[in-house]
Length: 169
Image 1: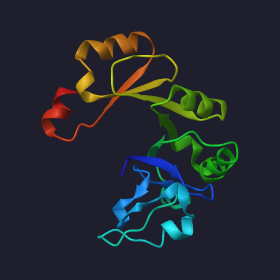
Image 2: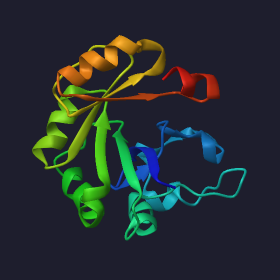
Image 3: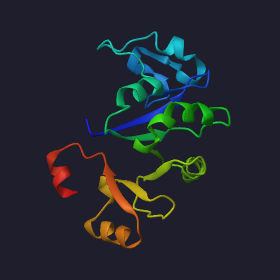
Image 4: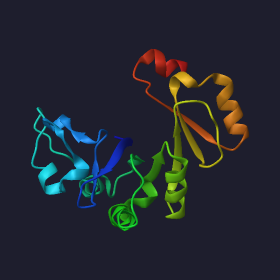
């Protein structure tokens, strides 16, 4: 693995976990929101494949000492109490981490906390807020990349799940 993208959500106890959706449906409990339970409760459930909810601490342990690049999307803005917990998990591997979000406010806050950042967007609304702009593949045309680069912004795409999509990008 050279590049790992994941989303971060917070348990009720304020610790970060890797989870795209707010509920624990993947682990057989769509009625339970991660934000309403402790990490201990959330990690007690397993997916049909036997996996448990991964903490950011576990991810750090896996990638420390490797060359893996992490793009971690903050699904919600961390609270004042959560930023130090995020830092305690990421500081040992900070050079490998880019924090991303669809929220410009969250991206600015991550920058204020010293993180390399990327702004996510579903449309081609280029901004120089972050040095990297990640846009939905369907919203990007070849000329857009040249325009982004001229503005000093690196461009990446997401949701390219087919060889045809990879070739188009």
